[in-house]
Length: 328
Image (tube, rainbow, N blue to C red; front, side):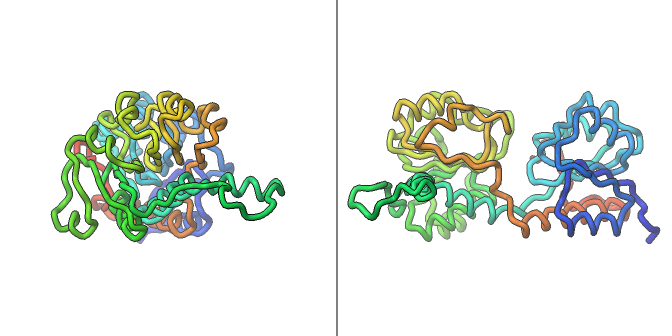
């Protein structure tokens, strides 16, 4: 194999083992600062690279792709989601797009369960009390939460992550309900003890906790809008580890303030890092900084998938995780 045959530009700092592997295999330009590239920097990178390795923080639209160099042939995205890339425009320009599916399934499902427990058992309130030195001892009525055993869990999106959440929730004694674009196999339903709801409205009326696990598409934008949120029980909790724009955040804030929902656990937000300030003021909300996939093992596995996609492309073959418009 020729030494370092492909010019690769990476847009963010990656785990050291991943960067070392990239340096050993390709002619790679790494990012020194762990900050997102500006739009101008991204365009400059696409004018230089044969392979661009962006992350979910890099918005790559049609106008930017139109300025890419003729040598750009692959966008090997570091992450499972590709809603930050105009895949159709890339394809029209002869640029392949790949991602890293399946790697963060278990990590994200773990975090969904952590958020459910954090909200229903009021864990952040107890932690804050201990850190402030305000705990004076056990009391029969202090920090009363609710058990999740026996509760109805509604899963919005029954793909890899949704099914992983269902497996965990079953172990906690929860009843599994789900809504999905397509009904899963009967065998999977039986294994999970899951009830399918074709009508999302009917499901959200009945469940106690809703876990959002669907991708971001035009069809899922504000899928949980004001009207649908109002169908939920006032005792219900909503957890989102998928994409922030699936929920109408302003409507969610209004309902949480009014006591029309019991709580929320959020790891993603409608406007990314520009988090609605009102969410920080609510005591019945647990907020995390988009860390569901943040395990060392998961991030290194993501990097290995990126490397396999680049290496397969460099060898003249289709990347195993190529994203095809219309199949997403």
